[in-house]
Length: 241
Image 1 (cartoon, rainbow, N blue to C red):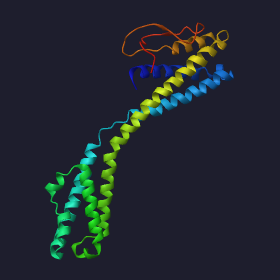
Image 2 (image 1 turned 60 degrees about the vertical axis):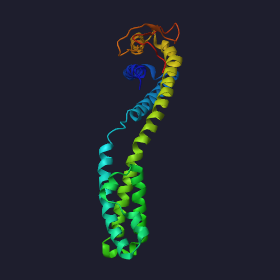
Image 3 (image 1 turned 90 degrees about the vertical axis):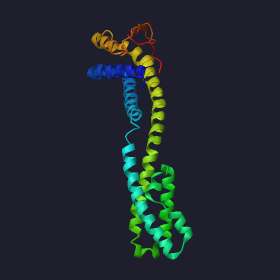
Image 4 (image 1 turned 180 degrees about the horizontal axis):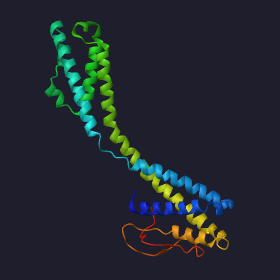
């Protein structure tokens, strides 16, 4: 969330806190109660999208490094045996496709390593009935395939997180507009219902609607709720999201 959204969210929490404490006062006034329910839902959705937006996209490098090292080790082991098998059977085509040592494997880009590993697994599987004496079996290939799938998932994870964060950012903008609309177009107007019977609640509600700019800049602005709701917004240079 940007600074304006963070400031606004703090105001939302203050309003919800005031409403929760005074629920017995307003819950019987249906138009106001319905607006509060929808405001609660919008705030919960803001929290969900904020968590998505703040999900870190770093921290996968160590996992990727570890899994890649395991793949390289398993792949080199498999390639050595397949190369020996190719030499014995005079299968030069197979030898050319599996003749990789640790140095060559370590120089492969991540995506190329995935393709290479899958090709070697497929070649070994194709010749599996001839490789028993080399201690190459289905379990060995399955373990390497699982590591390869895990590696592929790790590589796609940061990209997916970026997509999720972009979606959350867009959704947050809409949710804040929805929250503002409920406040300005309904609750700020309807709270006058309690002005005579519960003036303390109305005063606390208005105070909760004050937005504090955490950057410390001050500017007073009249609320767009109308003259009947002269809320002063402190330190809020720009309330648009």
